[in-house]
Image (cartoon, rainbow, N blue to C red; front, side, top):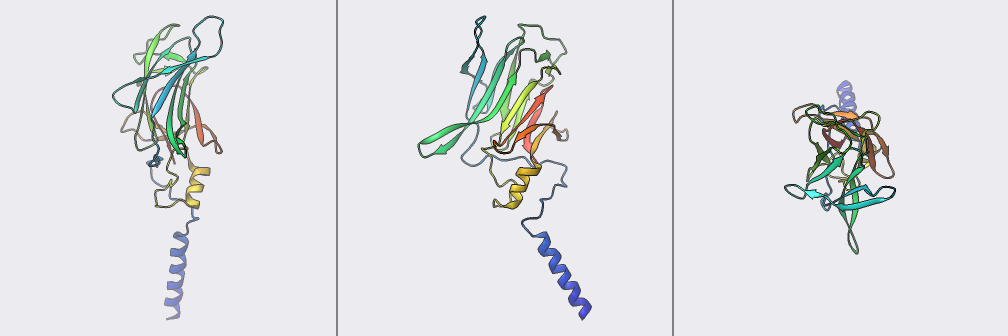
Length: 227
């Protein structure tokens, strides 16, 4: 009887330890856990920022992006020899109405464009239509065209803010210490080339305070903020 009682007590302690909200979340799954948009958020607005075309003039000019097949798909023309930046924002509710906050910034430096998807190299003045498709529920962005490449000495730069994400990162119904642990230690940018390819994490710099990640890109893929 004593041995049985000890066994039961030890089992109870083990169960309690496993249910402790401070225990690290399970990361054994091969598939990453993509962040989800908060109910009130979601990408809604975009703009292109480009270098002023007049010779000898500095500064930036802005214009509307081209929308392709719905508000979640944004297209811009990138030109070899010029800077192009696609910025996508999301509405954050305030007492005075929605305030636009940044979600994604994708910058193509003047010397970034390397080769078309068929392998043809770019020369100054060549252009290509670039499209960003943003998932309406998850922090997943598909950048195309597939096969477009950038130079190693002047790569494209992708920055993603996750301030519009649901802060219940582990989707267990509440925001607690596990979510704080995921935020501080596990989040990153992940990618895969094709739909059935496995996801892999890429190197990125981050601002924990600003809640953003930034990565240099040498080619187009599908990217996500995940853990």
